[in-house]
Image (cartoon, rainbow, N blue to C red):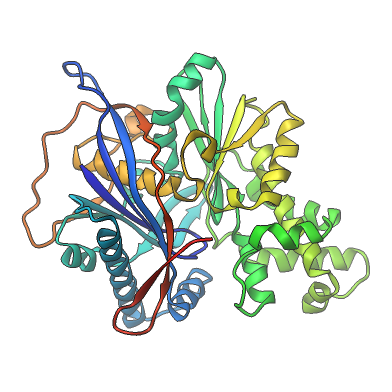
Length: 434
């Protein structure tokens, strides 16, 4: 079965597209769960139109919209996802049987330490109509309705990917996905998985860089700013005092919790204790590279501190932050001091930039085959996730599978591409990523 996945993360830095072939690794024995093989056929990232991205970030930051504004935004996002899907189909030369569209998260509602709701925009009917195949969307709410957090979704992927290795090693294996928000998964030797958001991944770094450069630069490319700065210890302590870090897992969060207001409040608080300027003046007095270095250290500390009580043997890193050598080095230094080795998922044949894309493709395969997904440690909370938009043809679901036993990632050298937005009728233009 060929599945195409679409997703734009918390940072809203582009639409990741992956075309993945998923098939049984070997025949299932009787009513036993099936081992699967995942083979990536194509991966690409489609840049958001700058004006549309600005609207996404404004809404995520709390901008109020009327009913017409929400309608236009989810429609335009759906059309952008549809364009990205069409481009992925053309580039791969493969026709998917299913598309999974995570959509664009604009709010993750947490109240009383528990997720109450979540909102992903991007009307899937546009994708189903354009591609002519069913689309699975809204993949988090079933878990929240069942009492879960709706995140991290990576928990079920890592259980299937690393569970056997953890059992063989007799030790916990940890993973971290360094997206806008960072989330860790602890795959235990007994097959259990504990997964939760640790706090900011790239979101605070991206936000201050975007503001400082007036949108000309959206992230700290290669960690160049962080490596040029020094960690401001008092500011780091103020940021680490945020109550989210002390909250017990399982927990989830989003950029509505970790935004520029958190950074500015911490800077002002530190300035006040030293008799310095406050507000924007305090921000201007702090060297920009030092601020980026401090936020990079915050992410690293939050990730490793979250592993303190579980003593995993290894931490496998993925997500856009795994491509930042300075962030990865800071995580490695703190982890090594606790006896935890650190590696990129690339060392295991899985492109760190597209691990989430493979996860969404697998999620779609499971939902199409009626396989409930466990995000937490309680199997009673497992649910078939998402809702289907059939497209032009009636929805035809296969017989349910007994379950999925494990997954193997088939490594295949494929060109990773970035698609730049264009304003003409073609919308996109391909080009190789550096």
